[in-house]
Length: 203
Length: 106
Length: 267
Image 1 (cartoon, rainbow over the protein chains, first blue to last red):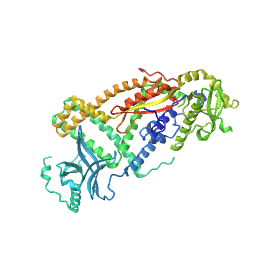
Image 2: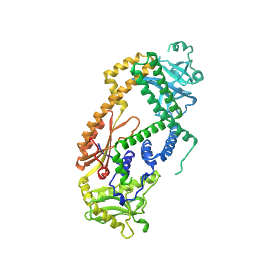
Image 3: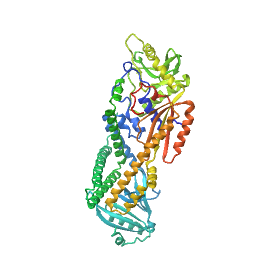
Image 4: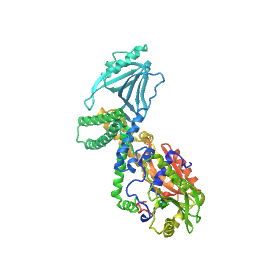
């Protein structure tokens, strides 16, 4: 394995050394700057992914740190999700999918996109397509209502697939989403099955 | 240095801070809750309700972070707080090392 | 010229020559050497103000220039003791020239400088950081542990709230196992790395990316002929599943030249 010096990551290694180490002159011989960081924290923060920023700054830099993190967040928000070039978004809502794998089971939040080709659940951070399904694979859509911890009424939306699998989602306005999905399926010449509620009543 | 304050990033900054603190409190809550569960004081039904409530809280926090797009902010705040705590503990455990540093002139 | 009575110190080299290295310093300043006996200080003339900036690009430039001067000096003189950024010698009074102040200091610290030169001769500093991936290792642990497999079976039979509680227990169990393993790995890796070093400093671990945890963060003083064997050792570790190594250098021995710190208990 060869050591390297010329990458972004190793610039941080250099900064750690040149800013905090090296031989030190006797205090009386040196120009002092007591207590205040000699160099702007923004560079190290930018390079180190911002999470070490607070180590190099002091409280007066907190605001600056938080605001630049927030600004970076805003830039990230505009990250595109994987849409086909001619794909059109018909409806976008916030939703969570029940997901179980190995030892981990949980609701995974994201944004649900009803497009002209498929149903897609996409999470921004870290960017990942949590679920997607073209209309041809959908047998039908069923909805039920429930209350969550905040007393907010969230609905359950269930996509029953032709493969026999089910994708369970929680969101608000399940009926609006159900209608949108069924509308689009009909536009594509597909027949969504109704009366799937009875099979959900037990869950 | 000019700081670019806009309503959206100011709000996100504060929201990130608030949620980081809520998460920390949630973690403390969990510790206490599990102590009680392990102690055998609670009934089967009470355990069930407690577990369900904690799970719902986890989910609600994840959803807020995703909806507001602030998951990274929150992580950054928590990491920053971790580092500050590290430093403070270090100062308490090794006062001589910190004295040496100030003598040399920072 | 009165404004330039500070002396920005880059390092001290094992050379008695008084030479100019060119305008390779910070902000293109002229770098030259001030010799005393068989050592010389590598400097540029500057105002008695430290270099401060909040602008990223500026700071990057300055730090690169600082390192560049040390690289050039190493090329020309061999062994160089590096200073940290912004080490500026201040004038003593109106009568003594800054160069004289420098020579007086070199004279005063001569023995210490000699000791350090001996220590770092023909050696370079390297950064070695070792990471592991908790998700991958967590999976392995979950698959291999009897206790955890039992827990998983129990979870399947529970109601949602209880299932959540059991899942938390399971995660805690996996985490605890991982921490125990981390201790073992640390000791193992540390020993293997140390074997190739003349000196080693354990640094604080830092926060890494989402799926990587920094297990070991060290600065190593390595003799030039041992760098390859260290590289081979690190290659082996890097090839282990779930582990990765960050190997940076060669650097001037920044971590190994400062005043000795109070000894850490237990190392």
